[in-house]
Amino acid sequence: MVQLYKDKEQGLVNEDLFDSYARKVAKDLIELGLPSSQFRKFFGELRALEARIRSQGDDDVAVRKEKPYMKLLLAKIHYQTRDRKKADAYIALEKFLRDLIDQVETRKDFDVLMDAVQAVLAYYTPRARG
Image 1 (cartoon, rainbow, N blue to C red):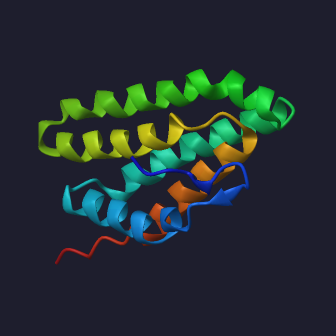
Image 2 (cartoon, helix red, strand yellow; image 1 turned 180 degrees about the vertical axis):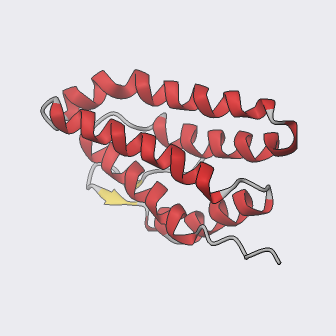
């Protein structure tokens, strides 16, 4: 499991999260056939959670209140595994997000999670099929 922080006490974010790890996750999801539209859909759901956190005070308490809904997002992704052709892709997406969500305790943690997912999205460039 990848760590959000290199040193949490000092607030040092794990730089690999946004570079080599993000590249690998994007590459793996692409190779497993996860459509970019599906990745963007779930990223949009995280953005909606972020807005809910902001509306509740934008603090650690608001993040703890929304943590169950982060877990609900994982259930929604898991539900997509019923598509047998792309089940492995959804399982990989669920694992990627679960590893990050399980570490979220504070607003800062959630921000790092969002940045990590956005980094994967940035590297998510499937080759055009032709």
